[in-house]
Image 1 (cartoon, rainbow over the protein chains, first blue to last red):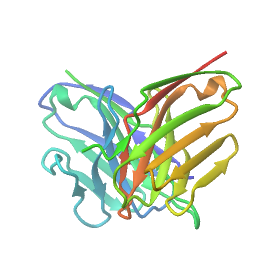
Image 2: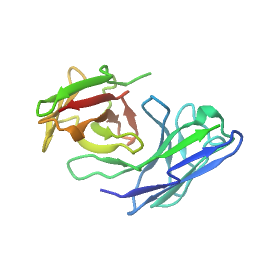
Image 3: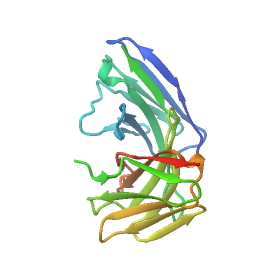
Length: 116
Length: 111
């Protein structure tokens, strides 16, 4: 399985500021995704990070609020812009990695963001 | 619109016994189903997946059953161990690789 790291692991930020989260994978992967887990909630897909082109956002998420970069097949960043307390969540990147007869998708350890 | 549902928010089971976690879905376009385990302050850990063309997949102590006609799947953990205490998420994938998650079931394994 792919080894995925995220930086920072956690942060406390003031409202109105921005935070950029990094996701690094130890091997080249086709698909990378960014998810959010709000307190007490399940995981929600924010966007698909496309290598060499603009990210594809899910309903309710916009590029101005969550700009994403994917400069190569092993790295992506998610920025949470103009933060408010409602952005306090765990942010997770994931990568797809499937075998011939199975499907697997792996997650990073997450970035726990608290906005005050 | 919640396409993947885990209707049991919690499950308590004695060590050594079987844990059965259930998941229902509404979208017939899902082609793979996955189960994840999540500890607090960690990312979800992939456990096992099953293709929509199969009805059973087994990996060690974990077995997933799929009833496509009922749009229902279940995860069996046998035997349950204290380290299995965690939140378990059911997820479903369409051909665009995006995952839809259930709300999760918190499993507590009692000694």
